Length: 114
Image 1: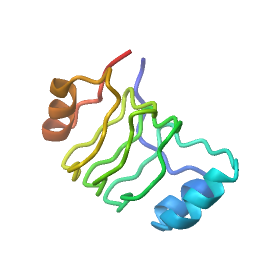
Image 2: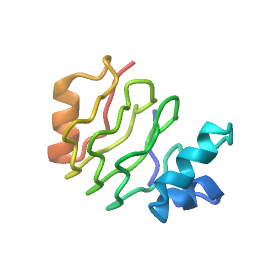
Image 3: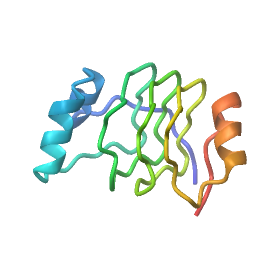
Image 4: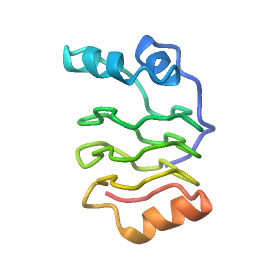
């Protein structure tokens, strides 16, 4: 899987997250609004409280993000990077090893798993 640079998406759901309007994002997601977040740049944002259930966050860049308490267990995270993120209380997909999480957190590597 070739990695590309993280990108700024041109859709309203992404803009809500860039503005840290988690409540509005969650409401719109729960009402069924679709969003393409793959490969998105989320660097240094506060995303705590996001409903990540079912989101495809493959290749996303979470450097320096506040991800505390997010349940990513049903999210797609292959190729994502969490360098220097705050991850206290985060629930990662069970297929993602602790070593992959640690490498990404400490060195910025892209997380790999099936």
